[in-house]
Length: 407
Image (cartoon, rainbow, N blue to C red):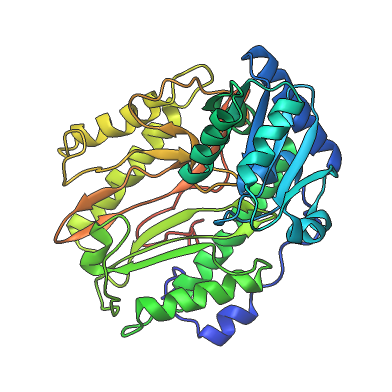
């Protein structure tokens, strides 16, 4: 095939890829300081004394310190005056210190002691009465802090931190946009490579393994996630239990991404291996046009929900749905993206958040025809002062998804 689908061996496809991460550094220490300052401003505006940042992307975003959430409490307390204190088991202090971008003291606890008591003691010492809790924090931690505050007779109001976390993270900096752009460029090259190795009889498992290797070839640690579907399985947004084997005339759906300094790519391509049927061709074009309808609705000051409404209304006009019914679009049109692959705000009815410069979204109004096939075209865009801008250009045509034969 001369349209980028098939025609290459796995060895040749991998050898054609090269590292794409050179020159793309993590955010600087100054940027983390700016984020802390912004969080402090928002805390004061919202009458919040401090925020607890749990291990995970919120801790990383504000401090540059990567750490995974587990059954042991690891996090940080950030006051509205910008005072930062890490909290961790005593035996992890040395390791945690090595990972810090923003250096700060570590309040520790031994294995037989209560980590919640450490949090509450910090609250008492710093005069914290209204504490915002990172919304990704596990319930057992929140419950432990609440119970310990009661035991210590300290009046501690626990509230959701969304006004601070989302308030800072929804609008990306130039550095974040640059990293996200490169991550998506990396995954787009992987998509092209994956399409090139398709042959009758190849399995979804084999393609998934190739995509992981291809992401490594362009400089990532591998795929951060990967969905490969053939034929009827493409009708189900997150796939089916069993792997499939590729046959002529199958719809192919590949949804994958990688991380660059923690920032996500997330791109889906759908196309037919072999000759597309009239129904596959029409459905694919409806998907492309729905994606464009959503994109065109995304304007500064417009509510996020209007993007979903525009895409869904177009599909309804073509006879799909209505609403979430299938054949049609059974899920939201898109999601925010950054350090988390799914983060606020969302392109869904009911999200009244006004679109603002720096916001980033997936645009994927998938068409599902259960029992037959599905089509999802997913590209991301970000908001500029003058409107939306694609990170990656949408698929070109069902017969030529990457525009390889376009003049």
